[in-house]
Image (cartoon, rainbow, N blue to C red; front, side):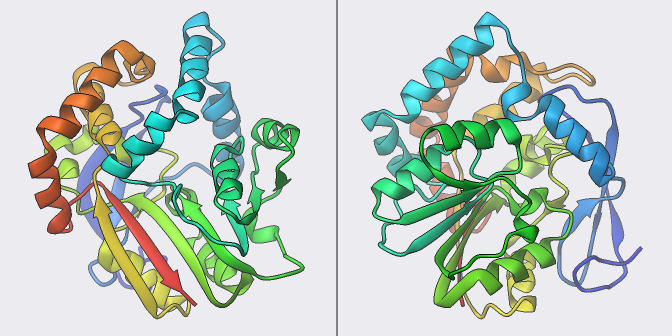
Length: 309
């Protein structure tokens, strides 16, 4: 089998994993390209099958239980609090909350618009794209400027100054097309901001098949600094900067699925605040010297990329 990106021969990673979040049946293995370093699923579901999986499990269709509704209500309160903004400064910002400006911004995969609201407050003329009908409707009801379509089918009347792909690129079937299309929508000197899990993360090695960021079958591709740089350069970006961070929530989630994760069963403990909140605090404030070191050596859990046209 050949690499999607550089067409080189790929090899088996020897990794086999399963869905540790929702309990979706299926075992998945991964291939790695020795040339561009990209890693991808060997047997992803078809596009139509994946659409039904998203509709059944993802974001707004998890559970209608009282516990889940309480979790979502508390989560909303926390996200809108001043303390949460301070926490983002300390723990790392995977959603680019603190990016400020006055130009046009496009948030790809904006969900219900929580981040979009922040970008508006930061001074941007902000727009969003969301393929999930329910999430789109919620964002629209807030008065946000959103489009309900696939990103690759979207064509803007005016170019954007900033495009954000926050935890999106790993979900796409064709990352080259996604990145190239984003570049075509940017004006001269426009910026593409990307966050995604880091395949070189020390936590991937520590947690092995229970690393939260395998997130199969939703994460189709995995990148490290080399492979994401190769992808961006292939699409015409030359000014690229990459930073590593290790969000405590991501590490806490890996610990929880290591302890509680079972094949074909949802890990409900991931949505129990009495478990996850204390663990996040402990990780951030007791392990901060270790986290600084792993980030410094490009072994953090998350990549933050800025690519300038």
